[in-house]
Length: 283
Image (cartoon, rainbow, N blue to C red; front, side, top):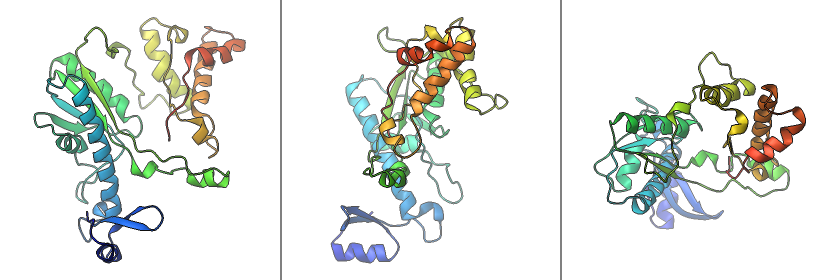
């Protein structure tokens, strides 16, 4: 990565490096390719990797500073959407360890869990299982932001007269350790699996991931205080033509509750209000 004088930067960019601008015209840096012939190591790809690494490391460092700073972390599970590696092992790199190293960790191991936006859920279940089994005492699920998601729906926003709203890169770090009696509990007995034969229609997914595990515990959908579904911010998704994603999902859960006889169809809207949450996340 180069941050040299303007003339030098222009020459680097002309040679194929990925430019970095502050504003529309001010060139402040460039990221050169890692290999002249490897499409997995172009400047643009490396910039995506770097953004994920840095934002995840910032979240991890903040967690370590604020939550039990004297307790060592044993293992990191990277749960972001970015994958790193060269042409011989695309996606095979270990962002968890890279983020841990940048955050100053030295005694933890790490590996990545990939499942698109569902990666953190899988990683949380795996982290809980690792702690419950006694293999590790403290596991941290960590993920960095996806540079590709910046302005992902910009065409829809601009067409509707909106500015580009998806302008946030976030990082997340979740500490998983033995029950301390005050933190939220991870219920492995309620963990759900979407099996290969379950189908991928929305009602089939909701049945497998909500109804089935709750029935296993003897619970109804209406016994749950709040469901956290795909909490996209409708102020961002609706102008781009994607609709109100949380409302759609809560409507689906309400329909399943009505189908099971827990509520009548007239009570579906009240179910959505009582058991739903507002969407807040950029896409």
